[in-house]
Length: 498
Ligand code: CO
Image (cartoon, rainbow, N blue to C red; front, side, top):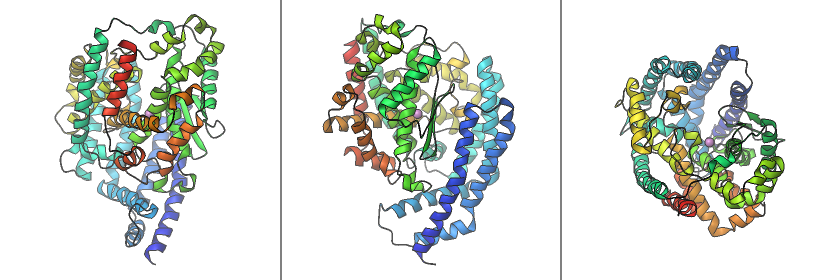
């Protein structure tokens, strides 16, 4: 067998595995939407079985042999084949390094802790969850030890979500934006203007909200015949196959904007998922490039498009048709209300500016937990202290503080930074897009197709043919640059609070 034959054999096998594993996505969707409560125990075992199957395949001798043989080929740099082999080598090496037993313990422990977290959050009971979180942190530290790192254990986990990215680099970028955001926040505090947030609160039946959200999705071009919109407490997007990309949202009957922005956010993820090259489905290069690139797509639609004046020039008449209440609210007041800036406890409810401070806080804490500089038992107090430092207010209960997000309790450490990196990339894409097209005029005319096509051409169609930093540079002509986000946020503050 020569290198080319080995490559082809390997890809056929990998594709077949992907088809089997795509059923796992459907089970995950089901678990978070309609699964009966008592099904959790066996569902966890189903996930363990999938994990074990995948592990055996990727660590098998046959896989290793085919991979080594295929790597002998003279594949050109940046070629499709070479990147497929890069991702497969990475998956193989990472799995070989972590003992199967440890991986399975982690899958089981995470599934269990996720359930206990829900209860602890509901009961506002920190003591219920801390021992379990402590176990997760030590399992993750063990994982980091097996994966290896040169500077600090946290790097090994960060690399799982952002291949090649180091904590020191994140620290450098975050340090820069933290200072600028605190400066802008002072400007907002000193302004006499206040967002008329009370105007967007009223009574909005969930059923009508659902219709309005579906209307927005259709207008922008999300294909409801290749997807679905369901309801969950924590909205998410998931790709089962290229023609089955589902999203969820949530309806708050007293606040109409919550669902709209959740829907736009998840739609951004979904558009990326469905514009990935269909013919590459099941191959490593057919996946999204990284979590931060994914998040740049969701933030682009949620914030840059969804909170713009232009967007509401189109959709406000329809909002009024669905909810006559808004005849009493001017378009200008509505747009200011959805762009209001005010420090608050909950990350997913935060405004565009302070959102990034929530991420800085989590990054610093999870880095300290994984590097062994912070004990889990001290987490609740440390959270509140740091929160007060950044936001000037202190959480009154665990659900407003360290218990609010699912990430750590489901075993995700190193994930949070990707949210703010996503904001940075979204603003950088915006800067480039504005140079090349009349973005806001298109939005005002309700013409979303050219915008989706631009994102498809620059980002989506490349799958994971490039790493984050390369893809950003290819799409925008410059390396990752946080000044675009600062520029975008400064302009926002100036517009509403200047
Ligand atoms: Co997202």
